Each structure stands twice: as structure tokens, then as C-alpha cells.
Length: 48
Image 1 (tube, rainbow, N blue to C red):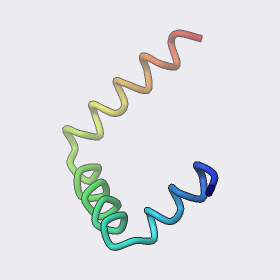
Image 2: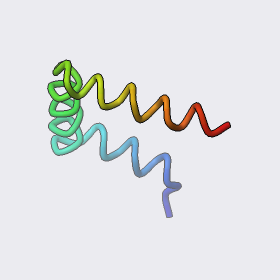
Image 3: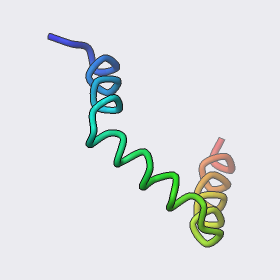
């Protein structure tokens, strides 16, 4: 059985994985999503 990282790598190389990557990149290009991500990261960094 393939390890989790190998299975993730296989998915990312597949057509569906490539679509997921490109959709994620499109979403991250939007300023409102960048702001949401910054707020989320700040919350996690503040809990240390």
C-alpha cells in the first residue's frame, strides 16, 4: 500500500489534481481570499 505522501503526489500529478491546483491558484490570486488566509494564519500563529 502506498504511503499517504505517495498517494498525494499521485493525485497532484493526475488531471484532477492539476485542476485542483489551478483552481487553488486562481482563488489565491483574489485579494479577499488572500486577506482571509492572512487572518487565518494570524490566528494560528497567535496560539503558540
